[in-house]
Image (cartoon, rainbow, N blue to C red):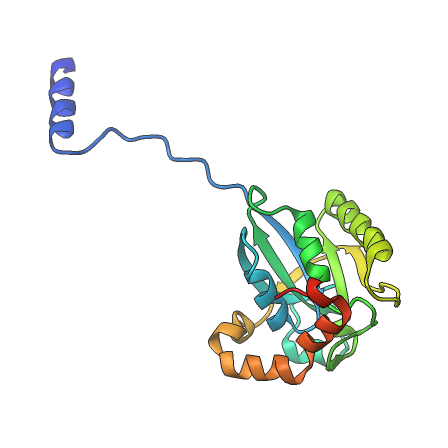
Length: 204
């Protein structure tokens, strides 16, 4: 049997195959959740960051289990439109994502972002653990000292609860409906306000 095994092994090599190798360990990924008004825009802004692997629009921060878009937009659930960001921490850190986030929002207004009003459009960082919470709190404190505008930062930094993915038609909306998305973003005044607030620091 040993001789037969050697012969079969030699035949496999001769035919261009190789013995099974241990599979590579899966890449380590981490998640973060940010609310910055319209989740179509938040998705678009984070998809541009090197090291971000995926973005998912959804709802979090409220009371209703598995809410629909209609329920959230009725302002009755307590949820905010938010985006779950999956990233490779070897390529981009959570602190870097938080720093990027500030430059994609107007952190000076409560329950509003640009042309969208109400608690579903509030800005918030939903930390997934104590480490993320401290990083985000420290970042907000540093921003208060360095911000290029006078108004205070009112963006919430809280521990996350359940995150509920939004309906399929909301996912990658800016890619599926580029003309409608560009019209919405422009008419809502998002980029104009960001430039007014942040100047050259505004996220591209």
